[in-house]
Structure formats: C-alpha cells, structure tokens
Image (tube, rainbow, N blue to C red; front, side, top):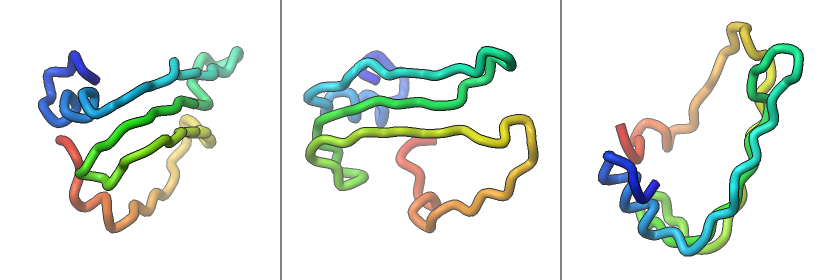
Length: 80
C-alpha cells in the first residue's frame, strides 16, 4: 500500500501501524483462490478505522453468476 501509485492507498499504507502477511488459499484442482486472510492495525479516517482488524474472505460459486447486493456505504468508494 505504501508503494501504490494511488494517493488514497498510499495514505492507508502510511496509517498502518502493522500488518501481517496475508494467506491466500487456492483450490488445487481449479487453481482459483478460495480464501484470503490478513490482519492490520492502524488508523484510517475515511472508514473510521483506528485499531486492530482482521479480514477473512471466503470465495464461493467461482465461475458462476451470482447476485450481489452492495451495502449503501459502497456508493462512496474510498478509491477509484
């Protein structure tokens, strides 16, 4: 994030106090990623973050059409 060309992502990177190495799990048959896990600590005002947080994303139904309903907060992205 600190080396990003996007100034918003750079600001996020500078605000991090720590970050763990991320783990990405890949399906051995398809080669598709199926899970991401990581953890961060820092302050980032645009999303009201100040503290420790972890992220876990499980991907399902890869290669299929799925309906996605985004939260209202997604109408104002942090970065484009």
